[in-house]
Length: 202
Image 1 (cartoon, rainbow, N blue to C red):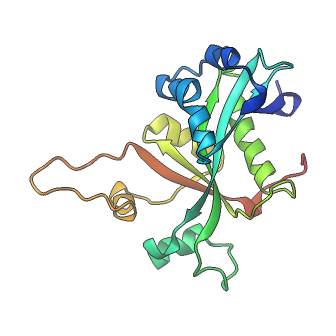
Image 2 (tube, rainbow, N blue to C red; image 1 turned 45 degrees about the vertical axis):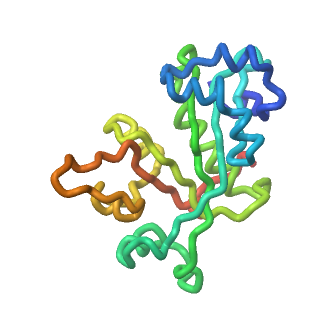
């Protein structure tokens, strides 16, 4: 299956009962699409789209995207040079505009068809094409801090913002309290520079 053969439908065009049949195998992500997605969109915190195999009754996958930034003033010069290696030096001192892939799910009936990587490539192409209505230089994912998922996103071309959780906790302003167990990050920030994207399909 090719994701470009699917319909990409906005939330308003997909009936609620079809969304409730969507199951990506992760309860927290399912619950977001079942219960929180409409309020999230009404509050303008993100926009959700569904990839459907022919009709809204057959949801293949779902994504939520939102505007974001990489706050360069909160990272070291060394790390900024890594993330913004190909950013024009005149812009390197500014925050980098980005799109956040806030939710991604593939229905269990369509998993193992390599649709997850296809959806990520689709998002890369979409937001680096002329169809994108705002400037966004980077794709950001706040990935679950699980080795398998981190490796999945790395195979899709994304890179961890920080090489250690300690560096990332400093960026997120998370402080380990003396005498207590260190905080383990539930998610890790990852990025992809959209200047390197092939958007021929758009």
